[in-house]
Length: 329
Image 1 (cartoon, rainbow, N blue to C red):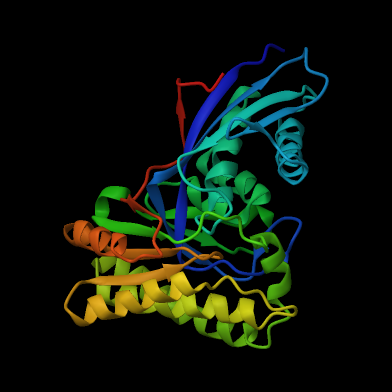
Image 2: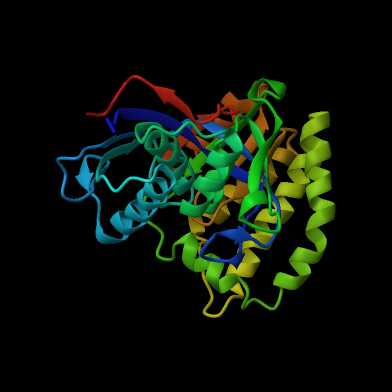
C-alpha cells in the first residue's frame, strides 16, 4: 500500500471547566465533563509521513530530536493509528508550536490533536470528527477538545466509544478573547498526567465532582447567552478549585508562583475599576485573562505592565484541527 504525507494544524484550548482526574488512566476517560475554547494563536503544526524505508519512528519536536518521554508518547499514539490502519510501517514526525511547551498552555492538546489528524490521513484513513476526538483523547485527554472548532464540551461518557468532544458554538458565535499572561516559560515540574493520577488522593475531590453539574450548566448558559459576568465567575471558581485539588493531593502539587498571584490580584483591581476581565488557570503558572474583543487591547496593555509578565499572547476562538499543504519536511 502506498503511503502519503499529511500535515495538520490544531489549536490549543483553555478549559473553562477543568478536566482533572481519570476514572481510566489508560484510555484517559475523565471523571467529569469539561468545557473549553480553542485558541487561535496557540497552535501546533505536525507533518507525518509513513515510510517503508524507515527501521524506526523518527520524532522531531521544535527542530530537536524528541526526548525519551516525548518519544514514548508519540510512538504509542502512532501505534494506535497503525492498529486502525492495519499497518506496521514506521513514520517520520516533525512538530512545531507557536507557543511555549509544558508550561500550562495545553501544548499536549494541540500536539496530539494535530498528530491524530496528520497521522491518520498519512496512513490513508479518513476519520469522522467523533472518531478523531476519541483517538486524540487517548494521546492526551484535553486533545479531544482541540478537534472540533470554537467552544467545545468533552462528554465524559461511560466508555471509550462515547467519551469525545462536541461543539457548543462555532468560533464566530462570541467575540471572546483569551489574553495569556506568560509569567514562566520553564517546563512545569509535575506534568498533567501525574496530576490526574494524584487527584483522587485529595479529600476535596468528591465535593468538587458533586458541584460540577450545576457549574457546567452555568457555563453552557453563559456561552449561549454571551454572558461574560456569569462565565467569568464560574471559571474563576473552577480554576481555584483545580489548584486546591492539586495542592491537597498526596503528595501535594504546587503550580502557583508569586507572578501568577500578582496577575490575579491585578485582575481583581482592574475589574473593580470597571474593566470586564476574568482569570482562569491551567495546570501551570501562567494566567489566562478572559475578556471580550473590545477590551482585549486594554487587558493586554495592562498585563504587559506587570513586571512578572514575560510575554502576552492574545487569542480569539480557534478553528477545528485542519489539514494544510505547508509541510515541515
